[in-house]
Image (cartoon, rainbow, N blue to C red):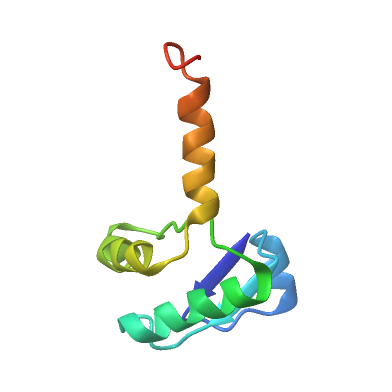
Length: 90
């Protein structure tokens, strides 16, 4: 799991949270730094399949990031699920 946050986390803290990669971004309230962090993770690790915020406060930021993220993997997963739903068989 990847994470972006405004607190510096030690390797032990990241591991305890289940994070494989973490980006410290002290300007979490600004869209562009968050977008840059997501793009950096995507460049390093591949397409971002999902973005989840941690609390209602961040829902607007999450929505803006989702509009800009490369979610091709997510779109493929949704298509596969829809194909497998009853009534969608060929």
